[in-house]
Image (tube, rainbow, N blue to C red):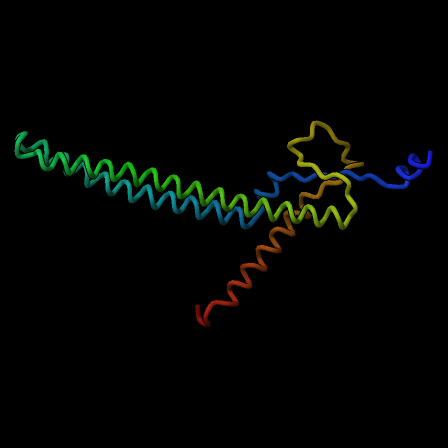
Length: 169
């Protein structure tokens, strides 16, 4: 009976966050996505230029006899392999950076959720994707608050970085 009274005096509160909406509303996430797309576009352009050069080499090879074109065929094979390695490295680099960015942002989101949960004495905060049903009159949605705090922290980080730049930059 004493334990039942002790449990009843402890208010259990539940809340949720839609992390997909938090990401979509995150300035930092949008900036990371923009940088990744820009880098992908630059690499795609570089690959197109290298491929155009390779096509020119192929045209030269077809105009030559088999014996005269042997050295160029070797060069073609080396260049082709170099382009393939470049494609793989570019993909790996962009993917690794994206993963790193996502881990960093997820850590910030987690820390914000923990801070808000502790501040408001929330017993359990779930991601909306994992919830099949909830009564929105009883369970509080912290999505906007988490998004706003994430953006506020990002703006502060940018301000700190800008303040370290030399004057006139």
